[in-house]
Amino acid sequence: MTQFKSDIDDAISDFVKKCRELVRADGRDKLGYDLEIGGGRKYTKIIMNTGNQKMVWAFIDRTNGDVLKPATWRAPARHARGNLYDPYGGMLNIYWTGPGYMSGLKRS
Image (cartoon, rainbow, N blue to C red):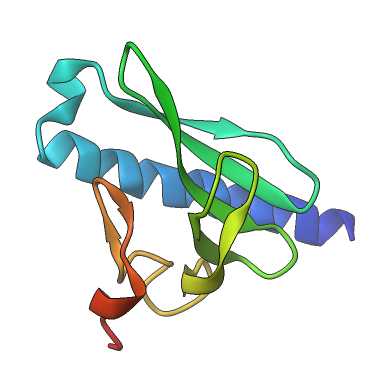
């Protein structure tokens, strides 16, 4: 279990780095936008800090690496938008605004 915890933490860290690059590529970093990693036992919460407010940007299921869109501040939506261990590293349906809506998901 300790090895998986380390692996998932590394995968989350790499994912957030890539997501920060999306935020920077859109120029939002100049406005003070940044992503933070929040704790949790089952889900890691990724938070967008805009400088004057914070919102949940995504959840990561720590049991399997699924990337989930937030439904509320405390809970993710049901369906995964990607997975940290897929060929895209979870990035296929990720935009600077967060995980995409189900209706717009890319399949490959």
